[in-house]
Image 1 (cartoon, protein in one colour):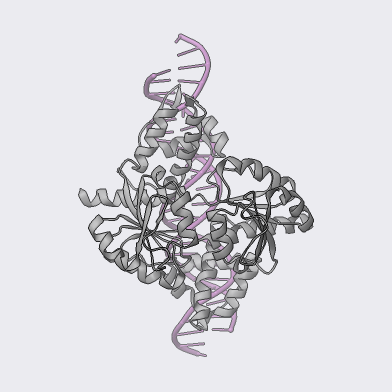
Image 2 (tube, rainbow over the protein chains, first blue to last red):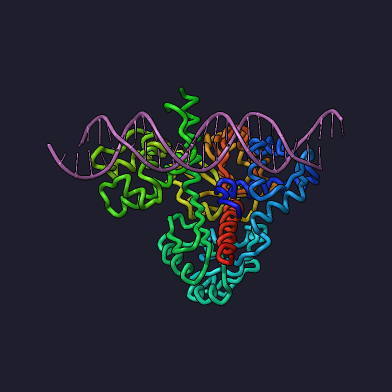
Length: 212
Length: 212
DNA sequence: TAGATTGTTAATCGATTAACAATC
DNA sequence: TAGATTGTTAATCGATTAACAATC
């Protein structure tokens, strides 16, 4: 890494990947920064700048070969190095992620889930076994788990974050709605209420505009 | 609205609200921009700038009265004007939102959910009735629904977005993982894979650092 | 009054956009 | 070669930070 790549670029990278996947599916062979920009609502300039943070995926006078671009972005995101994850809290949201979310597409293997509910412990959701939360600490240590997905109640959030960080987890995917101190682990927040409040703000202010 | 307030500010506003709620719960009476900044990892300057986009909630020489600040932020977000929402797709993720997510705290009333599964249609989840997706169009029109929460499969995403926009929905909260054309409705994307990929990127690059 | 802390203007910094030479 | 389009440097724009006068 030459110099620090901004978080904005990183977040756009996953969007590029998604879009390029669609191009692969549509059997497009090449695309120019201009066309990609038009599709995604970005300037061609920005796309070229972004992609160049990770080295030239394109070819002057030609554009970007879709297959090459895809593997370039995947390489930049590092998804070929698979990370091991566990879900903590197999309630509604946890089970939704376990059964629906494609962890593999993000370069992540979901190893197991943990809960305290005796009705759940010992069962499986899809291929994912559910263990008792008491065994979480041991499991993380023995399996060198990289990521913890926290889908449990607000009250248990902070103490669980502390626990998993202590055991060596390096990333916390936080769905609890609480701002966590990762104790050294990186925290990625999915604050659904922030998202809905933002949408609400814009919907409301659009309405006002029309009224005036 | 004097001049356009940047999206960054809007998104931080929900974070402020969350934090201030915690202060209310802790029965704090006042707080300075300096202290709030330290807690949230922002500069005092930024907090004062942000809050001033919506008028002076603070008092010179004193700081911000917590209760006043809270109602100020809520006023800025406009949550007292309640929006009506429906969930489309009552599978795993949909039901997780229906039963766990606090729509009311975001100034939103969840009216109903829609699905095609005959096992679900006609039942209730919590207080939320589940109707057949065929009746969605009518329901939106008759009840002047403001927001649609899309928690259905990728394949049905785009056509459903088109339908709800046509019926007058003004905001789409998009969990489908597909980039949607809102057809005039505002789209707020919750792209979980983007979020996980970003976390993965940082975890991986941190690991590399340590190895070098 | 003196101290604190806001509201607000000015300075800095970083991100986006534009331009263009390199080159396929 | 001529046309297209990248990679990359320079210019612009906007967001963040710093500074300070206003004032509680």
